[in-house]
Length: 278
Image 1 (cartoon, rainbow, N blue to C red):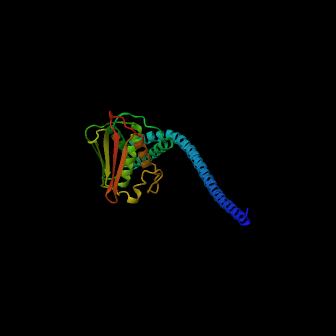
Image 2 (tube, rainbow, N blue to C red; image 1 turned 45 degrees about the vertical axis):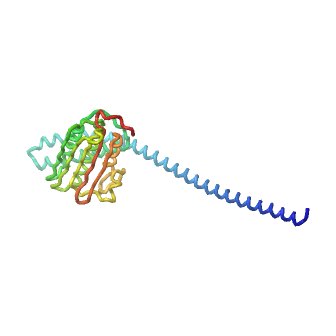
């Protein structure tokens, strides 16, 4: 074989080896980068699992503490109510007793929200009258009234739905307290229920107030846990509302304009409606 042909073959072989080596180096570098990415993903997942574990432990602890606090809180509520009755002729002292009652109710509502958020129980659905639930919730707002502000409710037609009465009562109580906090003296808060005329499978509950409204940039976040624009707000009230709505296969929409008020529109399955697919 001529020497120049041997040189060409050797050169081709060398070039082929060099190209193969470069490709192997590139693939090795890609593998190294991918391994590094996978290690970072695994580390992040481990951190997320640890956070979830800690949150679960905190949730269990919070639920136990809430139960322990509720027992003496119930006694305080009874004693404060008795004091109010005993002090009917002494307005100044009666007002002090009313402050105790209001504080106890505020704490009880906070504990209820914490328990719902920490345990996330499923809704025990049965036939309930939404009118009865709303009226009970309105009674629970006693102590949070504002001068000249009244709560008016209208119930049109059918009012029986499939729901968990305790959870729904907490839902409407949170919405009512949220609205009362936003409404100034002389404002108004109205509730209206009606059957959805299109499907007739849902009851619509409209809650409208003339409060200060919600800034547009906050509307997408008001149902997020722990999001609050109030200095002392926990950010759990409306998060619980969304949780209860989801547990009932319902929906909620909010419309608000600063300076004009806020409107919540809730839809819940009526009793006897065809089975819904989640």
